[in-house]
Length: 439
Image (tube, helix red, strand yellow):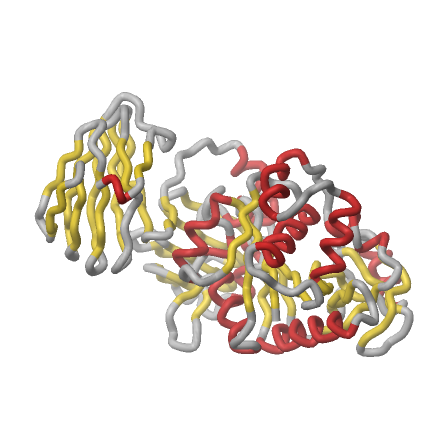
C-alpha cells in the first residue's frame, strides 16, 4: 500500500502545546501498548504498519515540520516537502510526482491519501488497505471513504451515495451544512467526507498535467509557489464522473480542539499534575517541571508548556485561535532531526537554551556571524568539532565558540547541554552551514 499522509496546520487551536513548528500531530499525549506516550503521527504510523507491514508511507508537509517528523518517525519515512502552502490539490500533486519520479512507484499502483491526525482504531487502516485495492480494480477513477455519521455535524461535507452498498457510485456532494440540513442529508443516507480517498497514480498525474504545465517532480517543485491555491475537492473530486464511495462505520474522530482531544485521552493528567476529588471532567497536560494543582473545577482543560499556560472551559476552548494569533512570542520548544531544544531564558542580548541530542546524531556544521556561543555539557558523552579540531566532551566540560567559529557536536550517548548565545543580534537567520568534508 502506498499511503500519503497530509500533515499541515499551525496548531494554534491546541496552544500552548502546539505552535507554527510543532503542530497538534506531534504532541505526545496518547499511551501506546508499552505504556509510553506517543503523538498522533506516531500512533497513525504504528497503526499503518500493523495493518500492512510493507506499506510505503509518504508525508506531505511543510519544511518547518520535517525535523519533527524525522525526530518522531526516523529517517526511513518518505517526505514530500512543500516549499510553501498551496492547499491540498497542489500538495497531493507534488506528493504524487514524488512517488513517481523519486520513489519510482509504477503509474498503475494505487495511492491512498488521508489526514495525518485522525483518532481511529486499527480497523480504519485495514479499511484504507481495502480502499487501495478497490482503486486498483479501475472501476472508478476515485474511491472515497465515506464515514458513517454519528450526529448531524456542521464541520464536514457530505457524500450522498446512489445506494446503501458497501461500495457505491456517488450521487452528489454537499457542502458543510447547518444542523437541520445535515440531519436531512443523513436521512438520505449521506456519509461524512473525511478527506480520505484512493486513486491510481497515473490517473492523478494525468489530471495534474491537464491543469499544470510541468515536466517532472523537480520542475513542479521549482514552480510550486506559482500554483493556484485550490483544494483537491474543488479541483478534482467534484468534477470527476467515475467516482465511488466505500463505507466506513468504525470509530473516527477529528481531534482539532482541546474539547475533542481530551475526550480521547486515557488519563485525566499528563505530566506533574494533581486533581482533588471535587473536580469533574477536568484534564491537565503539563510539560513544565513544576506541579499543577486543580481543585473544585468542572469541564475545564489546563495546559502548561514553555509557550504559555491555558486555563479554559472546554466548550470555550474552541474559540482560542484569535487570542493566540495576537500573541507574538519566540518558539520556546522544538523537536529537530537530531533531538530537541527548550528555551530557558531570554534577555536583550542573550538566549539560554537546554539542548538534547539523541544518540548517534549531530548538528549541522555551522557558524554565526553576530553571536558567540558557549556549551556546557550536563550529561552524556560526545565529540565536538571546532574549526576542524575534534575533542571528546563529558559532563562539566565547557566549550566556547566565538562568532565565526565553525562548530558542531556529535552525541555518542544521549547528550544534554546548556547553550548560551551572546550577542546584540541573535537570530535564527544568522547561520552559515558548511559540508563536513571541509572539516
